Image (cartoon, rainbow, N blue to C red; front, side, top):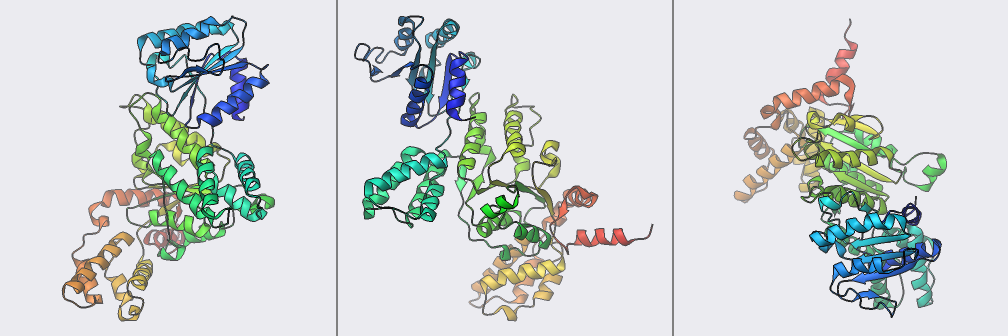
Length: 507
């Protein structure tokens, strides 16, 4: 259901107090005015604290700097007069006992009248006593069709045309921005060289990064990681490579649904986060990183509002990759105890979206402690697949050493004994191998020479791998994966070899 359809339904159903969180005042007021016409040409009155009511000369300035008087104005109109009252920034006054009481009185009075009060706010701030009286209605960011009309309008003003392919790319790059920001960044591009050009996409993407940073919920995460930068994990890489074109129009025509996402479970430092970055780079999709902790806020309803804002923004930027690191820590309290059920409600909103989303947002979630995850997260339908990322085998460690040393010393790679390095580092994760190389480089640098295989082995001998300090957790994860709860990310890991042996043992 579109915003206009939902808003007009609320008008017809006599929802008297409607709260719309949005920063796009101009666009929402235009949408409300359009809905007012559809509902029998209802009158629209707009109030703000500085200028009072605007538009009608007879009422101009009424309620100026007086929010209580702004509400009293609603009662001045005849009972049969159909009207919508838009109150800008009115959330600032809701804590006032007189304002709160007056709104609740009006909520009862207006049930018998064709009148609605709409509060516009940049964020949701609702006191407890008004939570039942107010209905929150989300106003979505501009859709592709709306953005295309605006871009075409600006193109017409310049007297220039663009190829459909370039126009489609411009429209797609604008998705996720407010209409005001779209107009501003396109006007900047036109002011720079008198027209819109294909390279203006970079300008739009920078504006998008600024916008996403300002939400303080999502981060626009640039990445140059490649699938080839991941050592080992052959099963996982094969799975990803097969889905490289799954977001294309050709895949839709074939009948394929959009891929939903991956849950990567395993020990810290085994390449789960690197995999998320490599997926985005390989599939040429923007990578959004969600810090779930930022969703939680102190005010009633604000955490749920931030969750909806995150979902709205991710869907507006689709197709994209949404990376949620260490999701087990974020939702470990989803049983509702200790935080008045906030975590449970946020988790419920998120898990419902995971199951029902139809937009091409590919979710990559990573988890270290599977015991902390609610059971609902692991049900089929949330993710396309759950992969277990275990400790690398000797063969995989050799590949990881090769990947890092090819980057650090591409000219001298043959001077390093990769086979010996892999043999001498049992139970080391990929991250621990990388830190071992850094320590070896410090050894060589401090003696003004290049680092050697012996330096790497010396650094490794001083490292206590996580596998030795967190044996119980690792054993539990391995037994969980061995029981068939997840696919193995590696073909040659120690766990996959153990499972193969068990399968071929006689009964």
